[in-house]
Image (tube, rainbow, N blue to C red; front, side, top):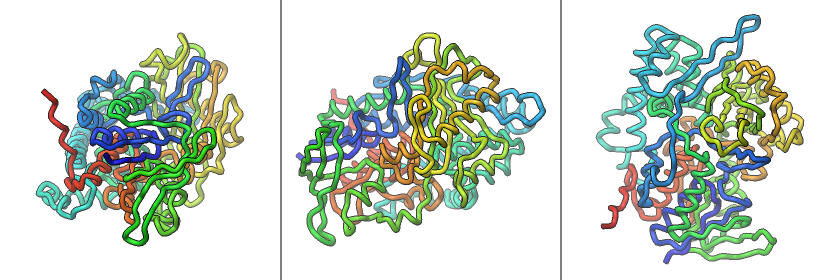
Length: 527
């Protein structure tokens, strides 16, 4: 039996553990934190439970496929609810003018097209064309690119890909912002179609237009909510890993990956780790999979000659944004806010320039995301109260500071929290919001760096610009050390929980020697 160590019990680590244990590996997962989840963590205080990471359940086919690989289904593991509306958009008010009514993105492509048409004549038809293109791009991505380990050139020479080369080239050589602007005039509609770039850890001006495929997910397929939030998704991944025989140990801090041999003969042979009592352990293994932040893995857990991605490689890379998270418990109901809300600043370019430009700083006003899971789930807040998760994209910079409970975070982080609370109150028409807050907890870039070893304190990972996408992204196997593999948002195929599930499958492919570009076929059900 192959002995396998997995570093990290976030989505990628748990998914990798489950797949490899089902494959027959003896899997031991080591998680530095006190609980599982990683970036998809959870915080509980005074009857409120907050997801501290992902909250958009997109790409349901990826989840379904992953669960099928483990002999189950999304329907058996999760209770999913399709949200209607999918989300609502609030725009920064014009000075001296009445507040603009929010733009509601309903469930269903036909209804979304009608909403677009009301804002801009002809936009409904153009959106239908946009979604058709996005759907085709999404399907091709799943068949040919997302699950591709890029270990054989032939995997890219498929007839479908070759026939589509002119179209693919056009989508790769222009930005998402330009692609959208050529089809839509209304600034808000451009923002709706460009905002998915933030899910890709970049800006609409930097994301290749191929990523318009994201619109097929939220505007076409709709947005789901797993009851219990993403914390429940993590619990189900952990349960499935354990059912397959994996052991998961928390409070286990990996200090070093053991490597034997020299040159091309280097092999991963286990890890050195400390338990929560501080005792040091040296554990041997045939395979090591790091689902920790790749920068930390490469520059802290490996020696200089063992690194495929040394510090000089990272100096040429572009980080995604950092984040200030503001978690609020609010007395009474907030009918003004649906489950998901986006708050867009009018000066879109200035907002992204503040985050990604040459002189990065915290934008003011910021374009922010607000989730109110208590709209759909009565387990996340006490009766009669609301749970708000506010995400403020900021530069990836730990110097911005750390968060804390009830105003105890760093000065800049708490000032950001004060501003966005006032912003939500003003733009959404909730004048007494600040007075009704009964619980407040903030998380800053320094927390991401400390708790998750996140490169530059980023909330997601390297940005999905062209030079950091697909085969150009850090891949899932070490080039210097045999038996060492990588999974998670900082490796291929990219950021987000669905991508983490795919990264686990890519590790499985690498170990199997499977060079195929598409998803692995699930095993037939036992009779």
